[in-house]
Length: 131
Image (cartoon, rainbow, N blue to C red; front, top):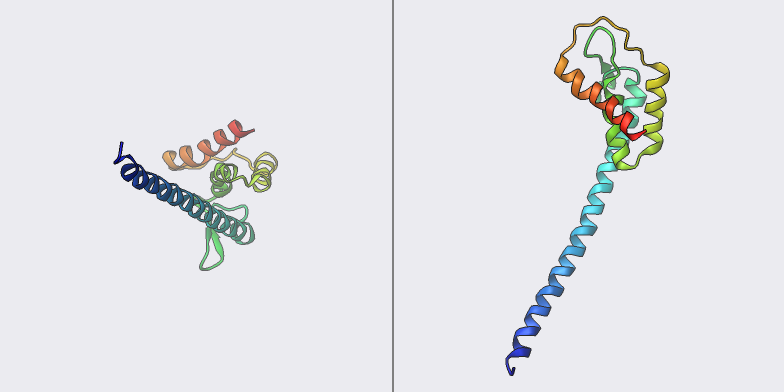
């Protein structure tokens, strides 16, 4: 019993130090998450400004590229689930309306099935699940 205080105090100090470190890490994680979200919104706004209605933004030239001879609007559909996870509901709703009101899949195109499945079909399934 006489060594009890000599053992307990260091253990308590270690636990307190760990808790402080965990709190710092949580704050750092929140800051990182906010920076990522800010960059996503910045990139999304650039896409809307320079490439809306097309597949891909070319940021250096501030122009766009379509994967095929007609745009499949890959970027908005693909970005939708990320928007929902990040809590960007206004942006996600804008994509939902765009898909319903503007996109026509009645196209006869030779496409890369894997990419279309994971990016477009996957994005549409995520949209269905979220709504």
